[in-house]
Image 1 (tube, rainbow, N blue to C red):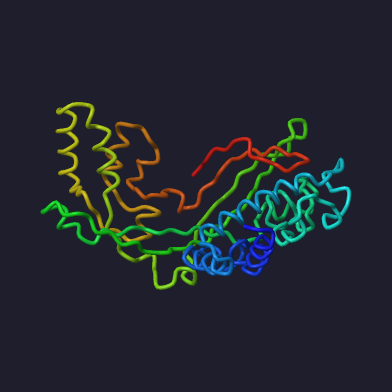
Image 2 (image 1 turned 135 degrees about the horizontal axis):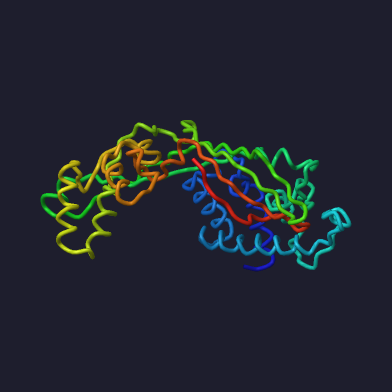
Length: 307
Protein backbone atom coordinates (compact mmCIF):
# COMPACT_ATOMS: atom_id res chain seq x y z
CA UNK A 1 0.00 0.00 0.00
CA UNK A 2 1.13 3.57 -0.64
CA UNK A 3 1.50 6.31 1.96
CA UNK A 4 -1.94 7.60 1.01
CA UNK A 5 -3.41 4.12 1.42
CA UNK A 6 -1.92 3.80 4.91
CA UNK A 7 -3.55 7.06 5.92
CA UNK A 8 -6.90 5.92 4.55
CA UNK A 9 -6.57 2.50 6.20
CA UNK A 10 -5.85 4.02 9.61
CA UNK A 11 -8.69 6.50 9.17
CA UNK A 12 -11.20 3.78 8.24
CA UNK A 13 -10.17 1.49 11.12
CA UNK A 14 -10.29 4.36 13.63
CA UNK A 15 -13.94 4.92 12.62
CA UNK A 16 -14.72 1.22 13.17
CA UNK A 17 -14.28 0.93 16.92
CA UNK A 18 -15.87 -2.53 16.93
CA UNK A 19 -12.58 -3.82 15.48
CA UNK A 20 -10.21 -2.47 18.12
CA UNK A 21 -12.33 -1.67 21.19
CA UNK A 22 -12.97 -4.75 23.40
CA UNK A 23 -15.87 -3.03 25.14
CA UNK A 24 -17.81 -2.65 21.88
CA UNK A 25 -20.87 -4.92 21.91
CA UNK A 26 -19.95 -6.44 18.53
CA UNK A 27 -16.21 -6.78 19.12
CA UNK A 28 -16.53 -10.56 19.56
CA UNK A 29 -18.91 -11.10 16.64
CA UNK A 30 -16.42 -12.53 14.18
CA UNK A 31 -18.87 -12.50 11.26
CA UNK A 32 -19.65 -8.82 11.77
CA UNK A 33 -15.95 -7.98 12.20
CA UNK A 34 -15.08 -9.86 9.00
CA UNK A 35 -17.72 -7.80 7.21
CA UNK A 36 -16.12 -4.60 8.49
CA UNK A 37 -12.72 -5.67 7.19
CA UNK A 38 -14.26 -6.44 3.80
CA UNK A 39 -15.84 -2.99 3.76
CA UNK A 40 -12.52 -1.37 4.59
CA UNK A 41 -10.78 -3.49 1.94
CA UNK A 42 -13.29 -2.32 -0.66
CA UNK A 43 -12.39 1.27 0.19
CA UNK A 44 -8.73 0.48 -0.56
CA UNK A 45 -9.31 -1.88 -3.51
CA UNK A 46 -7.78 -4.83 -1.64
CA UNK A 47 -9.24 -7.88 0.07
CA UNK A 48 -10.46 -7.60 3.63
CA UNK A 49 -7.80 -10.10 4.71
CA UNK A 50 -5.02 -7.98 3.19
CA UNK A 51 -6.36 -4.86 4.86
CA UNK A 52 -6.44 -6.71 8.19
CA UNK A 53 -2.84 -7.94 7.81
CA UNK A 54 -1.61 -4.49 6.82
CA UNK A 55 -3.24 -2.87 9.82
CA UNK A 56 -1.82 -5.54 12.13
CA UNK A 57 1.66 -4.51 10.95
CA UNK A 58 0.85 -0.87 11.64
CA UNK A 59 -0.51 -1.73 15.08
CA UNK A 60 2.57 -3.77 15.97
CA UNK A 61 4.83 -0.92 14.90
CA UNK A 62 2.78 1.51 16.98
CA UNK A 63 3.30 -0.74 20.00
CA UNK A 64 7.06 -0.65 19.40
CA UNK A 65 6.99 3.13 19.08
CA UNK A 66 5.15 3.44 22.40
CA UNK A 67 7.96 1.52 24.08
CA UNK A 68 10.42 4.18 22.90
CA UNK A 69 8.72 6.91 24.93
CA UNK A 70 11.23 7.89 27.68
CA UNK A 71 10.21 6.74 31.15
CA UNK A 72 11.12 8.30 34.47
CA UNK A 73 12.08 6.54 37.66
CA UNK A 74 8.43 6.10 38.66
CA UNK A 75 7.53 4.64 35.31
CA UNK A 76 5.86 7.82 34.02
CA UNK A 77 6.83 9.34 30.64
CA UNK A 78 9.06 12.41 30.88
CA UNK A 79 6.59 14.34 28.72
CA UNK A 80 2.98 13.91 27.63
CA UNK A 81 2.60 11.23 24.99
CA UNK A 82 1.16 13.59 22.40
CA UNK A 83 4.31 15.74 22.69
CA UNK A 84 6.68 12.88 22.02
CA UNK A 85 8.28 13.21 18.59
CA UNK A 86 8.43 9.91 16.79
CA UNK A 87 10.18 9.40 13.48
CA UNK A 88 7.42 7.00 12.48
CA UNK A 89 4.95 9.02 10.35
CA UNK A 90 1.78 7.29 11.59
CA UNK A 91 2.45 7.66 15.32
CA UNK A 92 -0.10 10.39 16.07
CA UNK A 93 -2.70 8.96 13.69
CA UNK A 94 -2.63 5.72 15.71
CA UNK A 95 -3.34 7.47 19.03
CA UNK A 96 -6.85 6.03 19.09
CA UNK A 97 -5.22 2.70 20.00
CA UNK A 98 -3.07 3.96 22.86
CA UNK A 99 -5.59 3.00 25.58
CA UNK A 100 -5.75 -0.53 24.18
CA UNK A 101 -2.02 -1.13 24.33
CA UNK A 102 -1.14 -3.57 27.10
CA UNK A 103 0.54 -2.00 30.07
CA UNK A 104 -0.55 1.61 29.42
CA UNK A 105 -3.11 3.65 31.22
CA UNK A 106 -5.66 6.13 29.83
CA UNK A 107 -3.01 8.86 29.44
CA UNK A 108 -0.56 6.64 27.60
CA UNK A 109 1.48 6.18 30.78
CA UNK A 110 2.98 2.90 31.89
CA UNK A 111 0.92 1.17 34.56
CA UNK A 112 2.68 0.79 37.88
CA UNK A 113 1.02 -1.64 40.29
CA UNK A 114 1.35 -0.74 43.98
CA UNK A 115 -0.78 -1.04 47.12
CA UNK A 116 -1.81 2.61 46.79
CA UNK A 117 -1.86 2.70 43.00
CA UNK A 118 -4.82 4.34 41.30
CA UNK A 119 -4.89 1.36 38.94
CA UNK A 120 -5.29 -1.22 41.73
CA UNK A 121 -9.10 -1.31 41.59
CA UNK A 122 -8.99 -2.00 37.85
CA UNK A 123 -6.41 -4.73 38.48
CA UNK A 124 -8.64 -6.40 41.08
CA UNK A 125 -11.85 -6.24 39.03
CA UNK A 126 -11.40 -5.41 35.31
CA UNK A 127 -13.66 -2.47 34.40
CA UNK A 128 -13.88 -3.56 30.76
CA UNK A 129 -16.41 -6.31 29.95
CA UNK A 130 -14.81 -9.67 29.18
CA UNK A 131 -16.59 -12.19 27.00
CA UNK A 132 -16.02 -15.85 26.17
CA UNK A 133 -17.62 -16.89 22.89
CA UNK A 134 -18.08 -20.42 21.57
CA UNK A 135 -19.02 -21.95 18.22
CA UNK A 136 -19.83 -25.67 18.14
CA UNK A 137 -20.17 -28.20 15.31
CA UNK A 138 -23.39 -30.23 15.20
CA UNK A 139 -23.28 -33.63 13.47
CA UNK A 140 -26.55 -33.87 11.52
CA UNK A 141 -26.32 -37.48 10.25
CA UNK A 142 -24.97 -39.66 13.12
CA UNK A 143 -27.17 -42.68 12.25
CA UNK A 144 -26.00 -42.77 8.63
CA UNK A 145 -22.39 -42.55 9.79
CA UNK A 146 -22.82 -45.46 12.21
CA UNK A 147 -24.83 -47.79 9.93
CA UNK A 148 -23.68 -46.88 6.43
CA UNK A 149 -20.26 -45.30 6.93
CA UNK A 150 -21.55 -42.06 5.45
CA UNK A 151 -19.45 -38.92 5.31
CA UNK A 152 -20.20 -36.69 8.33
CA UNK A 153 -22.37 -33.66 7.65
CA UNK A 154 -21.70 -30.96 10.21
CA UNK A 155 -23.23 -27.55 10.82
CA UNK A 156 -21.61 -24.76 12.79
CA UNK A 157 -23.85 -23.33 15.52
CA UNK A 158 -23.28 -20.24 17.60
CA UNK A 159 -22.19 -17.87 18.89
CA UNK A 160 -22.81 -18.82 22.51
CA UNK A 161 -21.52 -15.88 24.51
CA UNK A 162 -20.69 -15.77 28.21
CA UNK A 163 -19.84 -12.87 30.47
CA UNK A 164 -16.57 -13.68 32.21
CA UNK A 165 -16.36 -12.27 35.73
CA UNK A 166 -12.92 -11.98 37.33
CA UNK A 167 -12.03 -10.87 40.83
CA UNK A 168 -8.59 -10.99 42.44
CA UNK A 169 -8.30 -11.27 46.21
CA UNK A 170 -5.93 -12.12 49.06
CA UNK A 171 -3.06 -10.11 47.60
CA UNK A 172 0.39 -10.70 49.13
CA UNK A 173 3.06 -8.12 48.25
CA UNK A 174 6.74 -9.10 48.22
CA UNK A 175 8.76 -5.97 47.50
CA UNK A 176 12.09 -7.74 47.93
CA UNK A 177 11.21 -10.06 45.05
CA UNK A 178 9.18 -7.44 43.19
CA UNK A 179 6.09 -9.66 43.02
CA UNK A 180 2.49 -9.80 44.16
CA UNK A 181 0.66 -13.10 44.55
CA UNK A 182 -3.10 -13.46 44.62
CA UNK A 183 -6.08 -15.69 44.03
CA UNK A 184 -8.40 -14.93 41.14
CA UNK A 185 -11.95 -16.19 40.93
CA UNK A 186 -13.45 -16.65 37.48
CA UNK A 187 -17.07 -17.41 36.69
CA UNK A 188 -19.14 -17.44 33.49
CA UNK A 189 -22.73 -16.31 32.95
CA UNK A 190 -24.61 -16.90 29.71
CA UNK A 191 -25.35 -13.69 27.80
CA UNK A 192 -28.50 -14.18 25.66
CA UNK A 193 -28.28 -10.68 24.14
CA UNK A 194 -24.92 -11.53 22.55
CA UNK A 195 -26.09 -15.03 21.57
CA UNK A 196 -28.88 -14.10 19.13
CA UNK A 197 -31.24 -16.99 18.42
CA UNK A 198 -29.32 -19.38 20.68
CA UNK A 199 -29.73 -20.84 24.15
CA UNK A 200 -27.64 -22.94 26.51
CA UNK A 201 -30.39 -25.56 26.14
CA UNK A 202 -29.81 -26.03 22.38
CA UNK A 203 -29.09 -29.73 21.67
CA UNK A 204 -25.85 -30.52 19.86
CA UNK A 205 -24.78 -33.91 18.53
CA UNK A 206 -21.03 -34.42 18.60
CA UNK A 207 -18.33 -37.03 18.99
CA UNK A 208 -18.16 -38.79 22.37
CA UNK A 209 -14.89 -37.27 23.54
CA UNK A 210 -14.61 -39.53 26.61
CA UNK A 211 -15.05 -42.73 24.63
CA UNK A 212 -12.70 -41.71 21.80
CA UNK A 213 -9.99 -40.48 24.19
CA UNK A 214 -10.02 -43.71 26.22
CA UNK A 215 -10.06 -45.89 23.10
CA UNK A 216 -7.04 -44.10 21.61
CA UNK A 217 -5.04 -44.51 24.83
CA UNK A 218 -5.68 -48.24 25.29
CA UNK A 219 -5.13 -49.26 21.66
CA UNK A 220 -1.35 -49.79 22.12
CA UNK A 221 -1.91 -51.84 25.31
CA UNK A 222 -3.02 -55.04 23.61
CA UNK A 223 -6.22 -57.05 23.04
CA UNK A 224 -6.84 -57.96 26.70
CA UNK A 225 -7.01 -54.34 27.81
CA UNK A 226 -9.03 -53.44 24.74
CA UNK A 227 -11.56 -56.16 25.61
CA UNK A 228 -11.90 -54.84 29.16
CA UNK A 229 -12.45 -51.31 27.90
CA UNK A 230 -15.00 -52.56 25.35
CA UNK A 231 -16.88 -54.24 28.20
CA UNK A 232 -16.82 -50.95 30.14
CA UNK A 233 -18.26 -49.12 27.12
CA UNK A 234 -21.11 -51.64 26.95
CA UNK A 235 -21.70 -51.48 30.69
CA UNK A 236 -22.05 -47.70 30.65
CA UNK A 237 -23.93 -47.60 27.30
CA UNK A 238 -21.28 -45.49 25.59
CA UNK A 239 -21.84 -44.65 21.91
CA UNK A 240 -19.59 -42.93 19.38
CA UNK A 241 -21.96 -39.92 19.13
CA UNK A 242 -23.77 -38.16 21.96
CA UNK A 243 -26.42 -35.45 22.03
CA UNK A 244 -26.17 -32.96 24.88
CA UNK A 245 -27.16 -29.36 25.46
CA UNK A 246 -24.59 -26.64 24.84
CA UNK A 247 -24.42 -25.95 28.56
CA UNK A 248 -23.73 -29.61 29.31
CA UNK A 249 -21.03 -29.95 26.66
CA UNK A 250 -19.21 -26.85 27.85
CA UNK A 251 -19.56 -26.99 31.62
CA UNK A 252 -20.26 -30.64 32.40
CA UNK A 253 -22.76 -33.49 32.28
CA UNK A 254 -23.12 -36.73 34.25
CA UNK A 255 -20.66 -39.33 32.98
CA UNK A 256 -20.46 -42.43 35.24
CA UNK A 257 -17.51 -43.77 33.24
CA UNK A 258 -15.44 -40.87 34.62
CA UNK A 259 -16.15 -42.04 38.18
CA UNK A 260 -15.03 -45.56 37.27
CA UNK A 261 -11.93 -44.17 35.56
CA UNK A 262 -10.92 -42.17 38.66
CA UNK A 263 -10.51 -45.44 40.60
CA UNK A 264 -7.55 -46.32 38.40
CA UNK A 265 -5.94 -43.00 37.51
CA UNK A 266 -6.48 -41.16 40.80
CA UNK A 267 -7.58 -37.91 39.15
CA UNK A 268 -9.77 -35.98 41.65
CA UNK A 269 -11.43 -34.08 38.82
CA UNK A 270 -12.94 -37.31 37.48
CA UNK A 271 -14.39 -38.62 40.76
CA UNK A 272 -17.34 -36.24 40.47
CA UNK A 273 -18.66 -38.35 37.59
CA UNK A 274 -18.86 -35.40 35.19
CA UNK A 275 -17.28 -34.40 31.91
CA UNK A 276 -17.38 -31.16 29.93
CA UNK A 277 -14.98 -29.42 27.60
CA UNK A 278 -14.46 -26.71 30.25
CA UNK A 279 -15.47 -28.65 33.37
CA UNK A 280 -15.03 -27.69 36.19
CA UNK A 281 -14.25 -24.12 35.12
CA UNK A 282 -17.93 -23.28 34.67
CA UNK A 283 -18.60 -23.99 38.34
CA UNK A 284 -16.42 -21.05 39.35
CA UNK A 285 -12.73 -21.62 39.89
CA UNK A 286 -9.77 -19.98 41.56
CA UNK A 287 -6.39 -19.38 40.01
CA UNK A 288 -3.37 -18.76 42.22
CA UNK A 289 -0.93 -16.46 40.42
CA UNK A 290 2.27 -14.56 40.94
CA UNK A 291 2.89 -11.33 39.03
CA UNK A 292 6.25 -9.60 38.70
CA UNK A 293 6.13 -5.82 39.04
CA UNK A 294 8.21 -3.63 36.75
CA UNK A 295 8.61 -0.05 35.58
CA UNK A 296 7.97 -1.30 32.04
CA UNK A 297 4.78 -3.14 32.95
CA UNK A 298 4.12 -6.41 34.73
CA UNK A 299 4.01 -10.04 33.72
CA UNK A 300 2.84 -13.33 35.17
CA UNK A 301 5.52 -15.43 36.86
CA UNK A 302 3.42 -18.56 37.43
CA UNK A 303 0.01 -19.86 38.33
CA UNK A 304 -1.89 -22.81 39.79
CA UNK A 305 -5.59 -23.62 39.83
CA UNK A 306 -7.81 -24.50 42.77
CA UNK A 307 -11.47 -25.58 42.54
